[in-house]
Amino acid sequence: MRVAIDVRKLHDFGIGTYVRNLVRYLARLDREADYHLICRPRDRELGVSLGDNFRMNVDSSSPYSIREQFSIPWTLLRVRPDVFHEPHYVLPPLTRCRSVVTIHDCIHLRFPQYLPNRAALAYARTQMSSAARRSDRILTVSEASKRDILTYFDVAPEKVTVIPNGIDEHFLTPPADDEVQRVAERYQLQGTFALYVGNVKPHKNVERLIDAIHLTRRAGRDDLRLVVIGDELSSYAALRRAVHRYNLHKYVRFLGYLPDETLAIVYRLASVFVFPSLYEGFGLPPLEAMACGTPVVTSNASSLPEVVGDAAVLVDPSDASAIADGLRRVLDDEGLRATLRERGLARAREFSWERSIRRIREIYQEVARQ
Image 1 (cartoon, one colour):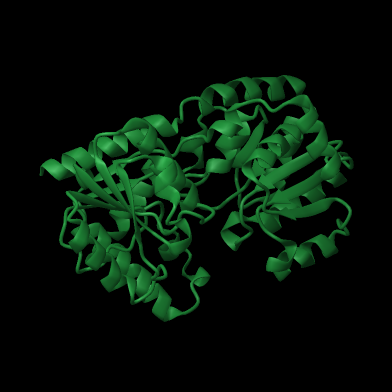
Image 2 (image 1 turned 135 degrees about the vertical axis):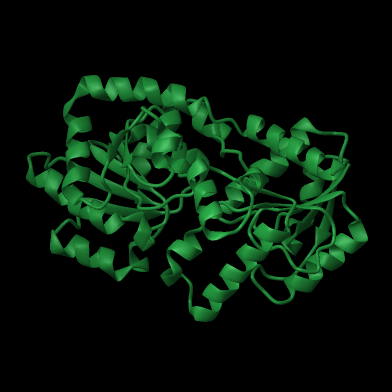
């Protein structure tokens, strides 16, 4: 079997995690098939570390560009794969081989304001619709995302397969005590703090989270701080205004992006992880926090209840008071924290990249045999 995979988003924040684990575990699990990875120029040496059955095919076109509509099919014409996997929603119309496309979520259709203009929305809608219609199989990461796909696109339910994301190994492996101490000292992470990990786009609901931190502190937990990892405060003026409004400059910190090894330690240092997102295709950070033994407060919306099960406190993300109440419940109840920690560790073990990639490989085989 010969498989082509578009890995140009290898270094992206969200889809990049999916792509990196896809190729990493395929290299571990499969020495029989031939894999042709369509990559950016800076990743041309990646195949050396993956194995002899991986070939790199350099493509300089940018994602969402006109050029990729021709360069990707041209590469596929040369490679002649049995199946092509596009881990995002752009499947060029000139693609003639059997194909699998991963649609992680429908966020561009649910929140069109994130796109720069109406033309970008039309492009996203057209490309997603075309990929859903023309691909031989659609993969997605949650039942919630599958429901969205079936709502927006006229495809048969049996065409859509749910294969959840997994947990990276470094979140499951306890770090050395001296490393924990080093990270705590470097980032000044002593005392009681709530942790949020992710970008700060409006649907992530971080402004309302700041409201909830203010309410929690005002209700008696004035030792509570908030640490945000994954984006800068300067990105969104509304967050700056929220911090100023409550005079929380000393109690809300934005650390930007951290390496995964450091992030795994910060999860363990947090008193509670809070993730009040309004919409998620999957929502990996709550699972990462659970894998690190940190109690979780998260939304009762979209895919998040499906992902966390009974191992987290679920709150209404549209209500800052509800978020604050969830935080207080966890912070004030040692028994609840212990229960969430135990359930969270068990829940996280149910999500394995190895199992998910084995299933994706089975999909390749099914499509190739059609």
